Length: 213
Image (cartoon, rainbow, N blue to C red; front, side):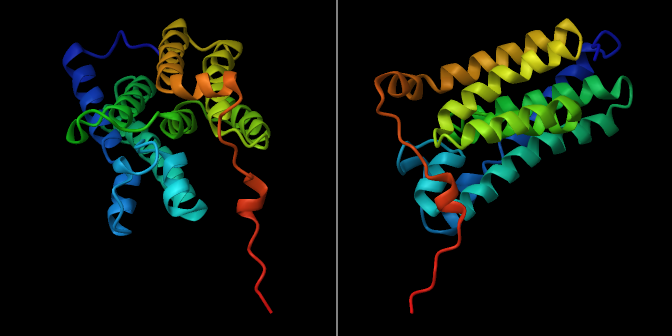
């Protein structure tokens, strides 16, 4: 990934396209469909975890996949539209989607925490490192602490890209996104330290409920 061959004007357009993809807040729309304003429910965060708490695991997983998909979609749209150095265009488009997810203009710049969108960026731009990151994240998720999983995942992204010798530009930018994720999770970090963070019985929630006889 090298951005030197993309003009400043094109780079601006790439980031804007990505940002608007990110502003598609899945949790907001699924909440409206279920007559709930997710931004005024629970933590008020427009992300997967708050959606799970408000509407259940199935709707939460749908939200997660859609939020990841929009970042991947931003990657591929920019990849094909801006053929000149396409991978760079896609990478910055997906980065714009993460920012749009976290700070949507239509919702007073209060959105989600960007983890699903970061996974979508990895899926589009760096599929092989993404596979390793996904496996580790799933293992950590079994602890039941979604916030801890998110934090570990955000750190693993720049580390994995560094191990696979991606350019410094990519490692630095994904490190900045990881720092943003930590800032977005600052309250969760306090609760993790204090031992008051909520846990999810991940396996229990995924198991189908037995029918009563």
